Image (cartoon, rainbow, N blue to C red):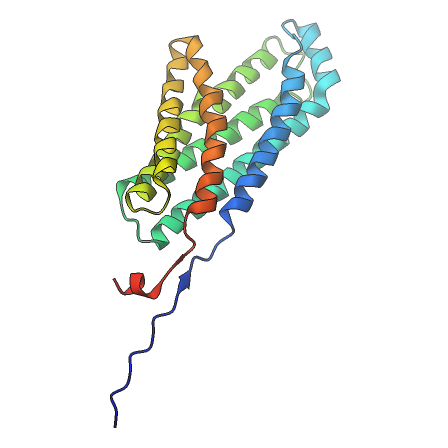
Length: 229
């Protein structure tokens, strides 16, 4: 009898929704929301009378814009979960992976808070309350501005360094992620110096490019030889 040959190890594929699809839907909701909310926020509404007229005229834009913002937060949360799950599937066991998870959860939570604050402006009786609209919008900016971008930077840094050092993404994408993460963390200076708010859109929109790059390059499967190792 001839000795039995060892069966070849099969290729294993990560089970989860495609990252690229999640990233593109996230971008679509983000752009739609920013377009609707940007149209409304350009109109002054400092007095109670102006606030009532503002909500009356732009109620639909505010509701639809905050719906899109909340939806983008859900898509971001899914992107974070799938990305961290895929890193673990690919064998990444490092602090960066946990930092990415914590940062992603924080960014998703703050973006949801921002959307809910913006939506609350349209509720009956809010516009007529003195200063209520301005207060809710300030909270919405805090959540969707530095409150969102700073933990987003932790997510970007955690994924970039963990995946880059394990050679799961291109080197240039890793360094792009590091630079974006630095910009995101510098946005925290907005709480001290208002001019630092320029880092908010820088980190927010460049992170979209990074997300698409990660979605397109992060492996979805491992070969049998790697499983054996």
